[in-house]
Amino acid sequence: MRELTQENYYEDKAYLTNSRFKRYQQCQAKALAVDIGEWVEDRDETPLLLGNYVHSYFESPEAHEKFLAENGDKLLAKTGKNKGNLKSDFVIGDKMIESLKDDDGFNNLYHGYSDDDVQKEMIVFGEIEGVPVKGKLDSVNVSRGYFVDLKTMKSIYSDEWNAELRKRVPAAVNNILGFGYHGQLALYRELLKQMTGREFRPYIVAVSKENVPDRDILKIDEEWLEEGLNKLKSEIVGVWKVIQGEKEPEKCGRCDFCRSQKKLTGAIKLSDLIGE
Figure (cartoon, rainbow, N blue to C red):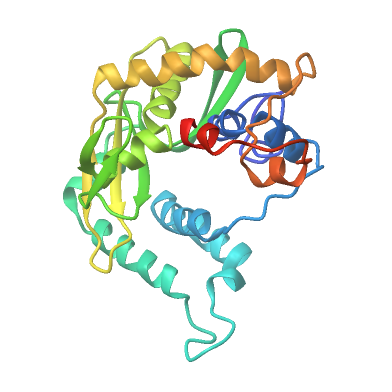
C-alpha cells in the first residue's frame, strides 16, 4: 500500500473511507457507478462547502486561505441584491465561527493547551475485517488521549421524531444516528488504536446552522460506539467485494440511479405498497 499524505489522500482509492462506505450502504449499484465514472451525482454541494468553510478556519489560517482561494467564487451570490457578497449559507458560517472562536471551552478542547501535542487533519489507517480503511481526524490531542470531530448541524436541540427509537429526540440525535457518526467515531478510535496501541476518547463539537448558532460538546456512549462499529464490521467485507469486482452490486431500487435504470415489467398491487 502506498504511503498516505495530505497531497494524495483524496485521490487514493486503495483504502476505503467511512464516507465511501456509507454511499455503498445506501445503494451499492449507485456507489459503484459513481466510482467507475458511469454516474454523476446531482447534489447540492452547499452543506459540504459550509462544513469545510468552518473546518478550515479552525484548522489553521493557511488552510482557510487555501479553501477561500479554491472555492471563493462558489461562496458568493451571483444574482439578486446580495450579488458579489457571501451567500446567506456562508454568512451563517461566519456566525458559527464567531460563536466558537472565543469560547474557552472549545479552544481548550479543540486546540489544546500550549504544551499539548495536537494534530489537525491527522491521517489514520488500518484494517477492519481485513479491509484497508483510512480516515482524517479534525483534531487529535495526542498528549491527553482524545480526538474531536467538528460537526455542523441544522439544530442541536429542536424536537424531532426518530422512527427507529420510536420517540421524539433532540435533532443532534437524528443527525448522529442518521449519518452514522457513532460508527465513524468508533472506526477512527479503532484505527488510532491500531496505529498507536492507545485508547483515545472521541468527542463531537456540534455547532448549529441557526441564525444564533448553538454549540455543545457531545460524548457518544460506549454502547452506541460499539453498535456503530459492529454494523460497519458486519457489512464492510461485502462492500469491499463489490468494489473489487468479486460480487455483483445490489440495487436499492429507490435512488436516482436505480430509477434511471428502471424498466416496467408488471403492475404492483396497492396492498403490496401498503405492506412496504
